[in-house]
Amino acid sequence: MLSKSNISFLQSLQQKKFRREHGLFLVEGFKSVSEFVNSAYQVQAVYYTAAMAPKMLNLSQKINSLEISSAIIEKISALKTPADVVATVSIPQWPALVHATLNKKFSIVLDGIQDPGNMGTIIRTADWFGIKNIICSEDCVEVYNPKVVQATMGSLSRVNVQYANLQDMLSKTKLPVYGALLDGENIYNTNFGTEGLIVMGNEGNGLTEKVKALVTKAITIPRGGEAESLNVAIATAIFCSEISRNNLK
Amino acid sequence: MLSKSNISFLQSLQQKKFRREHGLFLVEGFKSVSEFVNSAYQVQAVYYTAAMAPKMLNLSQKINSLEISSAIIEKISALKTPADVVATVSIPQWPALVHATLNKKFSIVLDGIQDPGNMGTIIRTADWFGIKNIICSEDCVEVYNPKVVQATMGSLSRVNVQYANLQDMLSKTKLPVYGALLDGENIYNTNFGTEGLIVMGNEGNGLTEKVKALVTKAITIPRGGEAESLNVAIATAIFCSEISRNNLK
Image (cartoon, rainbow over all chains, first blue to last red):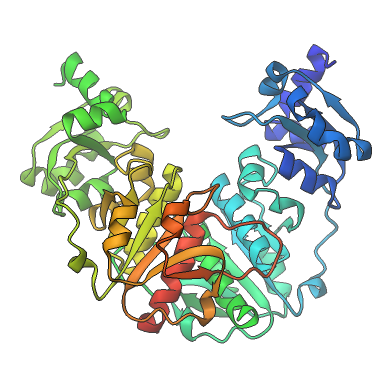
């Protein structure tokens, strides 16, 4: 059984401050939890309701797990519709970025993404297209936020998401830096080659001036209609689709 | 000044039941409200705070408008961060769908989209790519839901969104019916021609069996990685991008 102080501890992980302090975050739902258990992440503990006990048999041999009541799992859950399985997972300690690991592939660089749903959807989309690395500016929304974790649908367990000083990082890279901008080359005529960084900006303001200055090729998704802009997760997906289409044909 | 009953009336429009009863919905934010005022929609009234009064000068000549306090606009607003301009707009009475209006262009058909954010993002994306018509199954989320209106960023004023019985509609169309399915032709090798319907399914379950039976060509976005699925707004955007890329090159 979970003590009151255990429950408070788990609830506290809904807040960034306590996630940082304890180095843990919450993953909810059987599918996502299974994916984290079978990944390089360290799953500390899994809590599940009686209804989930049969499904948990395989998983619970591998990890520290505990059956708890629905009432208690509801208290722990950060979701509107509480999951019936919740895990605590260690926040990975990323080593400093090694630029050579980004060679011969495409990676996504995010400059100030604020919306948890957008961040989660970008991670899920990257995972669909086989993009393994996302580098976020330090002011992006934290990826261990429960809303981000939820929106990734388990993809956070497979995509490396690191935070970095983008000015520093982009000034050191030898890869082409493709920036999503309103006045660039038409994406449908762009030859992306075989490697590069795709840089996407904040929802309201786009790329910061400092990052824009480090873009080596500005790229635009041409507009056929009248909307003033595209949602950033949508724009990212169109970039992913364009860089992947030749390989996926 | 607004009476208590006026305020209750405006607040009631946050709920579908009262939107239906009164045939009105709320649009929030200066930019969106301006776009509705300059569209075919009938804007009934605009409420704005003192801070917005100078910006409202042009708009308020065209329409019935009233300055109200921030405290009251907060009560009316359905958003977490209340807007400083809120309008009431008439829900249009769409005539029965005339199939010929869909010829020589692409339109989007949505089968059971539930998430307001997805619906709004799909409308905004359609507007970006110049797609003018979206036909929704009757069980899709209502587009006059404040979260949908907000996510469209004004695009709802420019895209025709109608509800229809999809089985009836798709069985009568003479256009190609392209369905987003997991086991179809590779989208990157598909020649979409110059007209057609792009049919997208529900977030969790995809297309219903009845609609799937009416698809004339199943299309797949090939996967280069491991995510189990793509978000439906992302998938719709990739279809929009593919059908537009030849025209936008």
